Image (cartoon, rainbow, N blue to C red; front, side):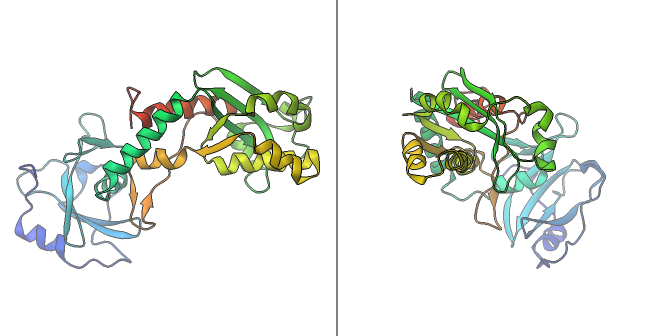
Length: 294
């Protein structure tokens, strides 16, 4: 531990005192870290964490304690990049809670991260890779309004609007911005099948929350064919893999409440082709092949 991480005995006593899960000793002020006190605590994913400033500094630096266990030292670089620097990990995080989640990682995380990295590199090297994203009418029993697919080089193979023959939920429309007016004249899903089938056939389909995108396709196929046999045959011609899990492992923000790594947003515009390109870049980051490697 670095020389700053030496709380005074009185502050350490405050940190190691039992914490009430229902409240915090001293709520974090709404002002910036430069104005925070020497000792404060807060609940992070349902568990109390106490922060104690080392006695030999007035800078926005605190040692984090959880159940009398020292997690590590955090420093708010308000004078530099505004990020939380985790000294022992050599990482920076925008949120204090995420910095603590990084310190909570289980011992197996390096091996799990390496496994995610190997998976991403294998996926990127696969000539059958197809990155898929589907924008929909909503979250519950949705229909497709836009289908995107790119190959491993980033070439867009599919970027089509779809007439869902159904209303678009307000929450979904607020994300992707598509309305009935935008989709007027767009083909229905069945009319797109002659284009979709050769693109998807034999492919390794990777999506962010793949079960959702695959379920949308399954629902559209069932509406078109009105029989499960051709639906199973069509979906059986391609393999599906989810990129959300490996991306969450690579980021390594541990949720003590759920005992797993927190899912991460993919980011980017809510446009099918743009989401595909964002996922392709995310795969490169997980693989350690990008300047912004996770």
